[in-house]
Length: 439
Image 1 (cartoon, rainbow, N blue to C red):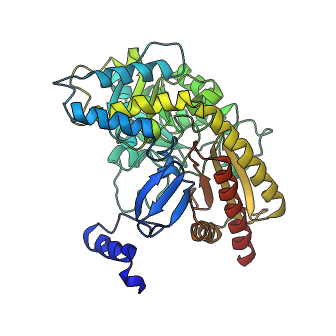
Image 2 (image 1 turned 90 degrees about the vertical axis):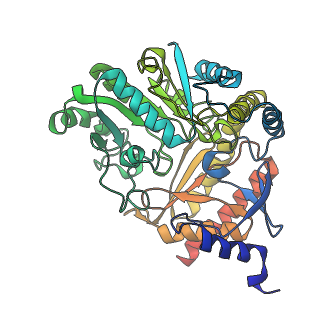
């Protein structure tokens, strides 16, 4: 049988003929089914999933309780626009999200379909509540691909190039990327210039009284799994409080157990004013949430926010069962265990492999930054691509990240077995060593 006769090749030909060229694919694999941390393609090949649908599948593929909840809901109600005909799963999930969001303030929730939609609505609510217009985001940020969220996003290619002009009244400031400090300082003796900068920013760029909100991923995702130092997020919240600015935590990728807490912001003891979630909220069903302090969430009038599909009955049923699954199976603790094992092995690899410039993470959200030279920290984009390729050849699917595309990001499903974790990490180590040797 020739390669052209395989199922995969036929499907790729159909994809090329029917799907817009801008919809990329990095593996050339068509998935037929998946379970837990294992993906099976149309050729019957099995792969360990170390990217979890880019953070969507913290509880793994097709978890039985969630599938059953979806099937049960499908027999009762597929859709009813909540603004006209309400249904209990929406209310029950909102109650659950309110109880889970960090902090003691009274909370309220609305639902949408995607992370970008959640961010869009968070911005709308913040502007309405503060009667201000400016929004601050951070270098290295990723908040989505819609007009506003693309404007808040920092990486130019492939997300922004050729799509301007961008939304007005959006401002970017340097983030706390300690490995590549914008101020060429070294933590902890740096004086936290990334916080001190705001005094200059509010004088040189825009007065604080015009800023409605500051939005940040507690751990930057697409930016390269950037973990800020302990002082950074509490410092930002303090600045926001002193200036009347709302603090929005974008937990789209970091939420639902990924970092060893239900939400990453809990690792820094900060209560957001508004929090956006999506991805692993419903084990793969399209759903996102905007949860925030009631005093802000209740400012828009009835009909000001919402959408036809937001909080679909099937997605809400899946969301409720997903959260229950995380809690029942203690997956936050499991994330911490996965992270401990993974960090130990990668730190040991770093000691003997000079292309491993930095290993960082919180819980089971871990990034490996590859460099050509540890002194210059020149990004090793080509080596990173080779690592992903060699891992795939040995049955492990993972992806890269970073503004220089030189970070291997690990989003291992929290239901991975110890044997699967060991096997996947061994493949990763071998692939990094092989790619480093080739240069």
